[in-house]
Each structure stands twice: as C-alpha cells, then as structure tokens.
Length: 562
RNA sequence: UCCCCGAUGGUGUAAUGGUAACACACCGGUUUUUGGUGCCGUUAUUCCAGGUUCGAGUCCUGGUCGGGGAACCA
Image (cartoon, rainbow, N blue to C red; front, side):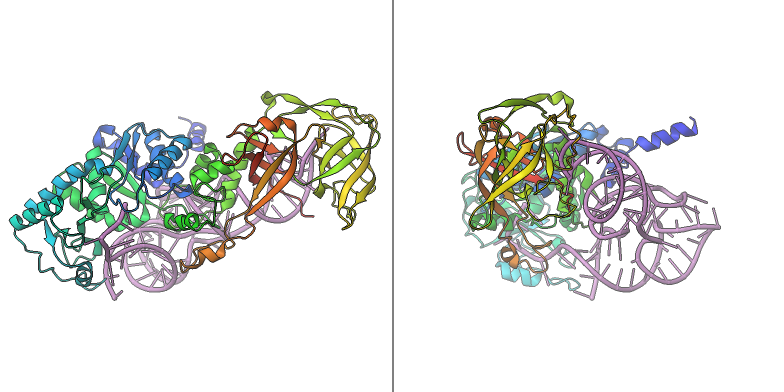
C-alpha cells in the first residue's frame, strides 16, 4: 500500500467514540458470537426530551452501525408515577425520530414473575433478607461516606423465615411500608449503594399494566440489570449518574449466575437556556406555564416536532454532539444550526408577510394581474417553479420601510429603489402615515424593463424584498417563539427558582399575517421557508382550514447589524 | 470525611507516545434577485507541579478544580 493510499484511508475514517471502540474490541475478541443487542429503557413517567433523543440515537445508532438491533423497554417498576399516556407518547416519539425497535417491545413489568423468582433465589442463597424496620431506621444505619454502617437486627434472620415473610409480602399480608426485602451485601462498603440495598417494597397501587396482580414491586437496581440479562442485552448504555450502580448491577448478575450484560455509561446531554429534568418539565405543564408537553417551546421531542423540527435535524444534532464521559452543556445554537442546515436544503420557499403594510405600485393599472415564475427552492432545482400573481396592490413587511436611514440600509426608504423578489424593481414615490406616525402605506413606481430574469433597466437595487399580492393573500396567525428561559442555566445552583426565570416574551402571537395563497392548503408536517424570515410549519394543535396557525421553528440567520 | 468519574479554543468532539484536528459560535472578507446559502480567513503550546522517554494532551506520582454517590425514585 502506498503512502497516499494510507492517507486517503485515514482521511475518510471517522474517529470512533469510546463506546464504539469498546464494541469493536468486543467484536474482535468474538464476545457474544458477534451479537450486538442494545436497549432504550425509559420509565413511562413523562415525555421524552432532546436529552433522550441523544440517548436514543446512541443506543439505536450504535447497534445499527454494528449490525445489531435494539429493544424498547419500558422500565415500569414504580406504578405511582407511570401511565399508558406516557407509554404511547414514548412509542410515538421514538418512531418519529426514525428508529425501529427491531429487537422487540418489552416491559419490566413483564418480568415481575421472573424477578420474584430471582429474589427467592437470593433468599435461598442467604443473600437477601426481610427487614422490618421503618425507612428512617434503615437510613440511620446506612452510616455515611467514610463511616461504615451498622447491621440491621433482622440481617441474620433464618432463610425459612425470610422465605415465609417474602411470600406473605407478595400475598398482601403486610402493610405498605411495614417491611422490605434487602440484598445482604456489605454494610461497610465504600460504595453506599452496596450497603444492603432495598430490592423489593410493598405498594398497594394499581399498575398500568399488571393492575392489582402485584403488591410488591422491585427497585430499579434489582430490575434493570436482570431485565437486560433476560433479554440478552450485550451493551447496556446509560448515563453517567448510573456509574455508581454498576458494581451493584454486576453483583446481582453474578449472584444469580445469569447472562452478563455489560453496562457502559456516557455523559447525558445538557442544553443551555432550557431544563432537562422530567420532574421540572412536568411542573411547567401542571402549572400551565406552557401549553402542554408538546408546547413548541418545550425541549420535548413532541414539542420540537410541533415547532417544526425534523427528525433528520435532531439526528444530525445528536451526531454532532458526540459521545464522551465529560459533563457538557451544548449551545442551543447547534440545535438550531442542524435544523437550518436540513431545511435550507429541503424546505419549499414561500412568500409571507408577517407585519403587513400596503405597497401600491402606482404605475400598474388597477385590475392588472401578471403571473410571475419563481423558484420553489433555489438550493434544489428539482423542486421546480410556481407562479405568483403580481398587481397594483401588494403587502410588504412594515420592517422593510423606514424614513430615516443610513448607508447600511438596503431596504425601501424615501429616494431608494428595491427589487421585489422574482418581480420588478420599484422606486419610492411617497407614503402615508396614521395619527401616531405609523407608516400605513407606501407608494412606488415600477421601473421599466426590470422584470426578474430579463432586467435591462440598468437600475441597481441593493435590497430584495418579499411581498404578497393583496388579491392573492390568505390570512393567518403566526406564532413566534423565543427561548423559554432568560438565563443560560435556568436550574443554576439551587433548583428552586427556574419557575421565576421564565422568559415573559417567549411566545409572540401575530394575527392578520398575509401569506401567499398556496399556504392555505399546507399540510401538517411540511416545513416552509418564509422567504427572508425563517422556517415555519402548520401548528398541528390549533390550525384549522380557514383559520390557519403557523409556528416559527427557527429564524434565518440574520447577518444584518443595522 | 470516604468511594467513583472527569479536565484539550467561547461551546462540543478528535488526536490511541511522533509535534493539537473537525464542527458550531464569534469576527473579517467574498459571492448572491433571501442582509439566507456557498466560499475564504483569524481564534488553544492541552488544569498545576514533578517524573519516565530521543520525544508526553496521551504513561506514572502528587495536587487543584468540576461532576456523581447515603430515596421503600429511575
């Protein structure tokens, strides 16, 4: 192989993240006969957010990259906070992101029987016992970091008594909170989680899947690793906060002599100007600070979808963010960039005037209508063209006209000429103002021979404006969104005051916007570029035929420093 | 006070002992019938101190800083 070939080989080879390196090493060593099975294990106690999107992309993406598949598993061991509404929302969001759980759909609750048997096995092996003490008592005996704990007086109960009591717990003989099952490990362990953790507790609560079949429920640590093992998960990927749980995860697998799934932790995603805690997002919903979990300002997947984000953009974002073990805060600008990058290539361009004022072309006769050809997407010739009607009365953006201007102003002003996109160059004549001095109408003349594409006028127009023919326009409400929180780190320090950090101007509703007529039939899910303004999509919740509502997903980058 | 993890430009991620790369952001230039897009350019001696080595961001030792850890939550 020549040097050049080596260089080319290296140049096209994308560097591997640490999990990919581990997987490749596992593959190379023939571990699990080359089988790769990952899982995404949400608890159905809330809606998925952009942080989960990263986790989804990692677990599904890595498996797919190495010829493996992924399970979707609902980690439903705490019926108190879980519901089918959340299960359905999660399934919808994962699917929308573009992933299929080819390994199957599972519920930890499906394993309650097996998990119960595992607990019995531990008891029989003398590795678990029933503790009759109240929670506070047990907490006191835990000791502290650096200070060993002390043994429960029930720690040395006979196996037979433990078996009898556990059976009774399952039968509902004992009251909620009256006793728990604990693993018998080491009350002096450096890792506090190994100081005889609780593994089963009594809850007389209806479970969204198992109903009242069970009154005892396994704790996370007793359920997760075993569920991975039951499914034969080879690579169990989770976030950094579970690092301390890994020794316990492995302890159970070893004690039970079951398939050794392996847990690997990576840093979760943090985004500035938003929060990523399900509990806190729930509070925003419950206190009506937002319009539900899918409010377009929410960092939830459903919110991003309603806002106009595409699955492609979110996947690209997740890819750019990378996978490592260092805590991070990603600039929300990267997310917006990913959306623009995707949409710039694909979004149809349309004309829309959000803050309309009248633009009258004096030298165009009343009633004259000329149809002008325009590109649907200059970035994509295959998107074709369409025709727009041009006439005497048009709508223009209020922001595009100013009386007092300097040299940096490219738009319309007294004495200035501008190009109307895909139409003609027009020259200022005069304008009208209302009592408050607000400009209500601008009058211009069309420059002869300045038609788009066949301009021989010789007139130079620095700026190009978007417009909509008054005769053609359809009205709509348009919602503009800004960041939900004022500060970069709304949870900063104490977690108490994020509710006080809400941006009062995060939603701006514009009514009476004038859009080109084709938009009256815009389908839900299509994202448009409103020329010069940004990317917009139909609001799936409020838009109705005849009463259109659009959301702005993101602005165009604005380079104007005027 | 003990255990675990981490530390590379403004933000992320790479460099796998051979002389710091890529993306986003920012700033400047250029192209443009979207002040969009595209294109070009500027921005770090890798937390500190020792050590090993011909050679250290990478290995070793000690420190500093940051994150996580005691729930009948996940």
